[in-house]
Every structure is written in structure tokens, then in C-alpha cells.
Amino acid sequence: MDVRQVVNVLELLEFFAERGRPASLAEISRHFGWPRSSTFNLLGTLVNRGYLYEPRAREGFYPSPTWVPLIQKIDRAAPVPPELQELVLALRRRTNETTVLAAISGMHVLFIATVESEQAVRYTAPVGKIVPLHATATGRALLSQLPEPERAAILRRAVFERYTSNTLMSVDAVEREIALSLQRGYFEGVGEFSEDLSGIAMPLTNMSRHLAVLVGGPFARVRAVKDEIIAIMREELARYAPGTP
Image (cartoon, one colour):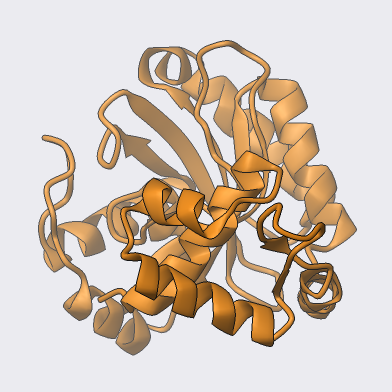
């Protein structure tokens, strides 16, 4: 369950990132449909903590430079290793499909490094995107690396929402798919979370944390070259993440 106050702050940051310029209290209140009093309190709190400021008097609020060193410190503490950045780039270059490096975040997959396809029709996968663990190939590749008790605990808490007609709808179905995928050496998404998308995922089993890589794109295009994508992924994993099956 989302905490409304936290969601409001995150949505406010996303608003400024898209807008790219200051906004007044009235503009923010109108954009989100928030009461002026609530908007005033939120902005005032962020101003008092130094996270918002007015670059010029009476021209509106904008995120302050205070955010920059915080984000840099966070990023330095858990960086994506250069070889894995190279892996993502190499896979996108050779397949020309969107490539993702992902980690577990609670009940979700978190995209921590991405390079999108150059093709006009492509899988849009920004860094920071989250998708369900149990309903995606990437998620199952990550789940496969967990000890069985830990995986079982996560799946017991999963909400089995039917995103498409192909969504797996039970713990047993997810476990069977994980077992099949481990046997064949790759995890496949067939329009389970997004109807028109397909992807091939593989776990990075020799890392210090649980990671997986995905190559994804439009269903018909990916399925037509599935074997080629699998071969490319195995070659590049052997080069940049040796020891991974």
C-alpha cells in the first residue's frame, strides 16, 4: 500500500523533471488537483529542509542542488559494475532490442541499467521502472536465485492480478515455469505483463547480489529471432559475466 505523502513528493519530483522550470504554488496545486493548503504545507516542508527553493523571487519553486550530492552518494554506494554496463550495451548493440539489467526490490523487479532499442517501435524501459516479480521473465530469473524458503515467502505475498490472458495465476504455475526455465537455460516472457511484448531473461548467478538481464521487444519481432537472441545472450554473458550458465 502506498503512503500518500511519499507518493506526493515523488510525483512532485517527476513533475519538475518533466517541466524543467520553476512552478508556483497555484500551478502545482492545479496540476495535481491538490488543495492549496496541502500544497502549501508540502512545499513549505521541502523548502524548510532545503530541498526546494525559489531561484528568483516570486517566480516559483524548483528542486535545489541539495539533491545532487545525495543521489551521487547513493549511486556510489551501489554502482553498476562497468562490465555489466558493457554487457547491457553489447546486448542492445547485437540484438537492437531494449536491454535491461534488473535487481529485486521487495515484490518487484527494479530496472537498474537500461539501453533502449533504436527502432521506432520498441520496449520502453527507463531506469527505475518496476514490474512484478512473478509475472515477468526477468522476475522469475531473479526469483530462481533465491533459496526456496525465501522465494516461497515472496510468492505467498504476491497478488496474482490478471494483466493479460497469459499471466501466470498461481504459486504452483510460477514454480513450474521457474523449473522449466532453469532446465532449458533461459526465462521467457510471452505477453504475460504486457500483451504485445516478449522477452528473454537470464540470471547472473556469479554476482555478489541477485541480478538478471533481459532482452525485450515487440512480441512478433522477438519471437521471430528468439534462438538468435538466446545464442547472443549466452555469448555475451560468457564474456562479461563469466561463470553464468
